[in-house]
Amino acid sequence: MTLRWRRALLLAWLRLPPPPPRMMTSVRQPEPVAGSMEEVLTRSVPPLPAYETKEKWPPPAEAQSLGFMRYYAGLERPERAAFLARLAAGFGVDHALVAELSGKVLQVQQQQRDLGAVLQLEDRLRHYLTPQYKLLFSHISRLQGGMKFLVDLRADVVESLASKLAEGPQIREMNGVLRSMLSEWFSVGFLNLERVTWQSPCELLQKISEYEAVHPVRNWTDMKRRVGSYRRCYAFFHSAMPGEPLIVLHVALTNQISNNIQGIVKEVSTSETEDANKITSAIFYSISSTQQGLQGVELGTYLIKRVVKELQGEFSQIKHFSSLSPIPGFTKWLLGELTSQMKESGRNVLFTDSECKEISDIIGGPVTETLKQLLTSSEWTKSDKLVKALETPLMRLCAWYLYGEKHRGFALNPVANFHLQNGAVMWRINWMADTSPRGVTVSCGMMVNYRYFLQDTSTNSARYLRMKHIEASEQVLNLVSQFQKNSKL
Image (cartoon, rainbow, N blue to C red; front, side):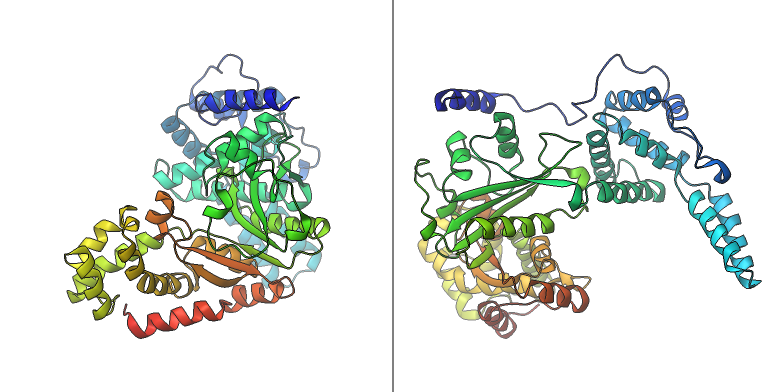
């Protein structure tokens, strides 16, 4: 296919209206299934077989599972939430039977009966701890389009819980069961790593463009640049979801560890020839999970490890592996701290007196209230004086947010937590690293490098997960020290 034709096809794709709401496009869609919600569930969800016949129990008829899928696909969002809640509540575990069996297990143990009897009772208990709907999910997973259906169904469960359209312990339990099943089906051994290039199918390039969650793709030229010279794009795929990327990683191949995103996603010629001798660093500048239904299924860690091996095989001279990561949540955290400080002490104690005076002279008003207004947009970056005055205090505040703010002992910031779990070092905080409106409003324009020293990642990861220790560079630790000296929380 000529470049002109590829360009025409891409332009046509990019002009298409947004895709319809996500749901099972690969599943046949004949006429809707008749019947009430209760009738469909009763007809579709197979009973849990008796323990004695579990090995010989025939699988449910394929038509039952297909009917379930078609009925569900025809429901609106609130109806789906009610349907999922009823499925979770009415077709889960028989708690009375489980309680009875648990008592028998305890009784046999207390009577010190032979181990064989105990193990048999425990196996029986395990069998009856299986929710009834799990059999339905298992059968659906074997159907054409079934895996994508289940991924999308779990996305609906997650959304229903987040929006409180469906609540209760039963649906939370069903969410956990689905996540566990998907974790097994999407374990790294079943995934295929593919490099995405300009020669990849147009449909795939379109999906990569739509799924980019960190730095939105502007146009087809931008997309071509991101899969062209000095760039790599990799994705995990599953054989049961052909053509559907699960998680996407964008890499910039540079001669140094990048300190801003502008230089990576800028508009440049797409015909530049790649010179391998100029490449010494690999910068992971965007990683996007494309399937909400796989939330909580670990894919990103394995993707980075696989990509590192791929790059080492292609460029043996690469010495540095690092991310260039956004800092989502920093501005929100800072605004919350400014508000609470004013309520508690009536003054701004995050900034020093000299910093407050310098900022006040520039903005011509009260520092705290004016800053709270300014930081909700990117307008303040148009003043060079204000950008310079805010650099020192915001850099130390950001360092504390990343290093010192915790959730259950781990880094509060989700991106920091992800890379630290992988064994990376919190290496460098970069000022005005993302000057896009989104970058400025979300993280005051700052980004951070998490550097991967390959010989230390296993040790660093273990120390973080077991001891909650954050490995950080001298720059970050110095900024944290400045925070502890000059700011108060």
